[in-house]
Image 1: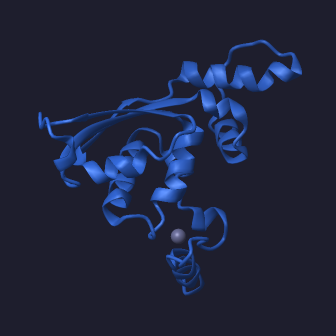
Image 2: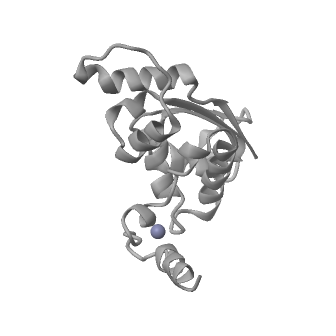
Length: 176
Ligand SMILES: [Zn+2]
């Protein structure tokens, strides 16, 4: 499988984000926001971050991973194409490979990461999400730093059975 980031927020997109955040204050200048401001609005998760768009292509991922991802439906559009031309859809194998493109905003990316980076998520789906995070880290380390499992946001895993990641991480931090 291969993950490719086809689109990520540009300085123009960030200027627009800043502009939208300031509309309520009656300011109408278009300037590129500082890294610090970007960090603040990502941390606050205010609505203008829903205008920052990513397009992420996942080439040749297992069909069942694609099925997990399409369950996320807020702020994301999915485009999925299966490879083979099997007329009998009923025999579609769970591990058949598909191409899946997600066009999504940064809030949606944060939300999907919360679920899919948890160690209670399916391990293959989790590894795909981890690869996406790595690719984003290369081009946009600030946004990548907000892609964390829910256990980090909520100070403990809230799945039916805890994945144990938070407890492990706090233990490691204590022993440093
Ligand atoms: Zn967890």
